[in-house]
Length: 395
Ligand SMILES: *Cc1c(COP(=O)(O)O)cnc(C)c1O
Image 1 (cartoon, rainbow, N blue to C red):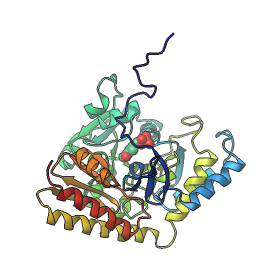
Image 2: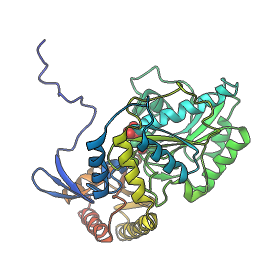
Image 3: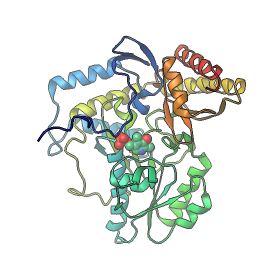
Image 4: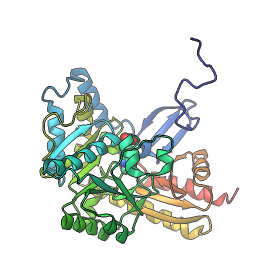
């Protein structure tokens, strides 16, 4: 068969920006032409410790020389360390390690259903989710988010999700029935436009779950792992979920995800009920352990909060100076979003021309996601680029 030469060899599911990066260091990236960019996209909140962090490089290369893969047929020392560290530093009592955010959320969904099934209530299998949410691209996770932008053409979708408007307390209460198993929410919506859920709302969801014996699932795939200045975003609200999904920053650029849970929420997950060939492999876990070691160092998260405050102040100052062109600054820690008056992707393109990488999100937001190791000097450079792009005015 001859190849259709007009069809791209790479499945065209992305509209890619025409830049090929060759190397990175800290918050900086260099493309093939040697042009330097300040990376405030962080591969969509993934490279939390910047590029080529010496501790991550050392952990990965040392592990690469010893052992890559044995499968979950055997104990894996690096995996056990990762689980112990996550448990020691979160609400959780048990951890399942996988390879991506969508897989982490799949595990959360399966666990919540299995919990009620295991207790003899298999009819309790519906999960309340929120408009504007993003939980990944598998059939279950697009069904959970429910947005036509994600689901169009992929029917039949997975049944069992009741999507309610974001921020509508009454709608959540009204959606709870005898068939509800859980409520799943991102403590800060990422793709939805950097929309933090107010602490009192998270507490309200916790109370609602306790009242109706529902499981509370937090999708911290994007907002977790130090992004908000706390290891997990929910800590700031003083609310613990029953189940939580992690990925993105967890591997600092190496693919790894995790589903964390209390022993109670995980009680249905018996041997054979779930698994992954690659999940928890020594390479991924060695890197995740190094990421956690750095993030748990004394002062690391306080420094993230400090940088977050500084960046936010500078962005707010720009909003005050250009109120017609920059209408809003929102977010927590180093998970910030700005709303330009012009189209967000066009504004991000302007920033890119000035050497600053950002990420568009829904609600016309441009996400500003520097690596958590960013310095004030680099924040200054980024804000100068943003100011210059604002001063350019409307095209
Ligand atoms: C990115 C993301 C996911 C999906 O992660 P993948 O690794 O792309 O599968 C899920 N939930 C949230 C909140 C995310 O930001």
